[in-house]
Image 1 (spheres, chains in turn green, orange):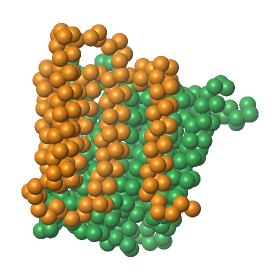
Image 2 (cartoon, rainbow over the protein chains, first blue to last red; image 1 turned 180 degrees about the horizontal axis):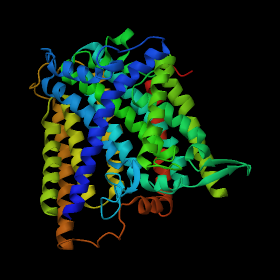
Image 3 (cartoon, each protein chain N blue to C red; image 1 turned 30 degrees about the vertical axis):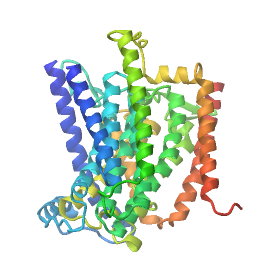
Length: 340
Length: 169
């Protein structure tokens, strides 16, 4: 009893710490990658190649003056940043980041590398993610500022529209895996398949569900408010969108929530489409992290490449293109499952 | 332990449900309604009905309430001018009628419960509220009501669209 409690606590602390660190260093990665794409150097001053920049930024944000404008709805204004950051971190409770381990024989029995495995894991992540929007909406409303409000409203409309397609895009995976538990979904992707009997590839759902993956990733971009779908904070139109009135650590919390959400959707995509922790050789968490970082790199790459959508384009794309495609994918997967 | 958790969740749900109607500002009412939903979701976990719990969070707390908030924010951007103005006669009559209906239903339910004795009714079958059981029931026993419900919702949606549009093209 005590031992399971301790391993549980250790796992939670490690995952939480790793997530915080990744969030901090994603800001550095993002600036570096974008700088490289734009033939610049990016942060170079603080530490070698600017490696200490995230720590300097964090300290700066903590010591900045915390402004609360006089016209805001105080309670909600203070609550909103936490409402946006907590769901972003909670979702990681069900994501498996590795196979079982004994820590090189240090532990008496193998410990599974996930905080918890519930039989509705996928739905849990979606449920928690759908709560994340409250932070943004309430921030926009409580700021009592028209740009903030427009940002919040845009965000809620965007999330509702893309959540549907996102949910439908993974139905194919659920049909193939026959489970909602993320651990079971990873285990269903074990082994190798052959294309035409000559080309081997891992049995990842990416290969049997390519359309599902594309739809999922597009929706993930929209759900995390990343370019080209970053309309809730479109600088050119809305000052800074929903977080215009926020300063200091409260602003940082929105920023952290955005990056944590990016990591969560990437981790979920890795688990469901890229075989999770599975890899040919070596420790499983390394494979998991590697795949997550490839997806995170894609996020940054998209931001550096694609211009922002117009609002009506975003809506008609979500409802008239993505949703029918996602439905088609569900039907196709069901037929595929019947055949096999 | 279970009783303590249940009481806590029930209290949260009940108190915030009262706060929903006491609040004068629609946004705060919506926020308390979300907390009520959360309390109910917690009770579902206690019943080990995990699927029902997740659906409660996704559908009610996550989707419907976001739409509610969205509409409230779009419509009602100004604070209510005189929060304590007396309501009109029509509203009072409607309120009395509706509360009478609710009271009647409550009395009926409680009476029914009492006649059944403690615990009341047979306990639900083993895997109550899991994805498997809900899915099985939905696609076998309740297939027809399920499909009819979705058609009714579709009709309501189309109706709302037609009513909202000024010109049909």
